[in-house]
Length: 185
Image (tube, rainbow, N blue to C red):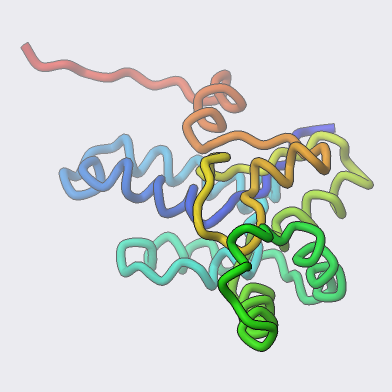
């Protein structure tokens, strides 16, 4: 079975950021990579969930967001799986400063506005039909002030493969991406 990739908003944001100079300098590199990635989204090799599109609020990402929108994967059916995932992956050391009411508000906000656990749930759901699922995210395992564990930590615990955008482009798709870089003398 072909590999399916589920991509996080930070990877899309970084794609635009990594290649903004190419795009603004009218380079063909950005356009070729964007066309390639969009073709993978259209044929459902790369899955972009609705919650990820909600997180794309930066004006620089609006163009690509509009192009992806018709292919978004709806996650409403996973809502009942998110609350237990939040409870299971709470970072208690970051929660000690909150009262019960604040904590419940934070959990509800996380459930409504953050894609991370939906990405995990989509990967687990898709793994039932296809074991070749990879989550694409730029998150690292470095500690921060998040109330829920970071994607790489949850992926390791739940046996979900993950990688980042450069690895996706240059390792997973290396045989499909062949281009020349011209260097001026």
